[in-house]
Image 1 (spheres, rainbow, N blue to C red):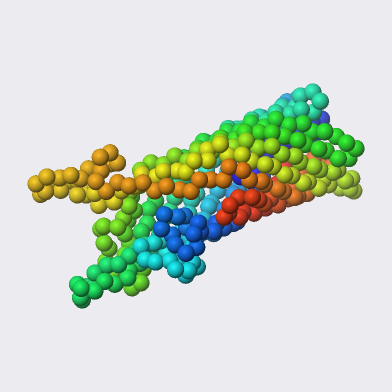
Image 2: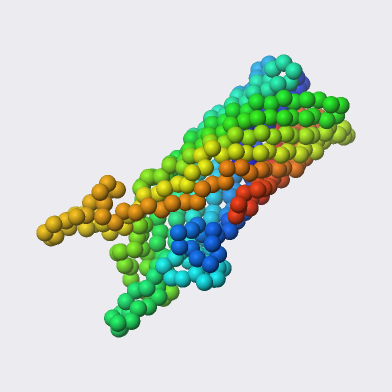
Length: 354
């Protein structure tokens, strides 16, 4: 969503070497409101999230073209909403939990400036991800001292699947100079796909009290998931060059409208993990259970809400270019017009040439 693209190559004709290095650190935070504050049944939970990203890379300028490579490490943390945050939430729901995702991505990018200051950019990347998931699930269980009475339990269910991502983007724009102002209208398209491997949860015990043993019945197994996104964006960036004793400064304003083409709800295939164990039980005279997700007895589907088709990202920042060729920028961005979701980002970038 934020900070896509390469290393912001140096201006053509700069009196420095053709090689450049760059560093970019990004912090994003936000929250999602629950679909229905009074009940989670059949709806998506609310959550808060934080994401930290660090990118390093090099690029090379040859005439009016620049190519480069970059490596990004990203850490994403989600804190699920507790039932106390929503009125009327019953048992049989998720009560808090967290997701931590770490990823390493490699990216190749290419920029070319043609006649009339028209430019073209392309980017392709691949990454690997690891997840640590935990959710607290509330349900009624028999009271160990009185089988006629049920007691409320909060079970801690965990999982640690792996995944990978593929991304690509194309951008076409033009840098229009009007005195000290640069007007940059652009249009682009971005494709991302995330694959999460098949995984099963583990019951690690009752949350309170913690001495209650595990129960091998409530854990879920999830089939392989694929999350696709195909977005087009149309935007404009305005900047103004201000001379300074050390070089120059450039205030920046940007606004982009995004349209998501992959806007159907996701359907996730799920079953109770216990079925795989029962499928191997040779004591059953007739065994209806199966391993996997074909013809399984306990399989069902979870359906997500449809993602928003249209939303906006606006940004405000400042860039500085020093006479030595060293460059720095600071950018603030915000997500607008996305139902139930707020997100804000700050990015710091540094660049040098050699």
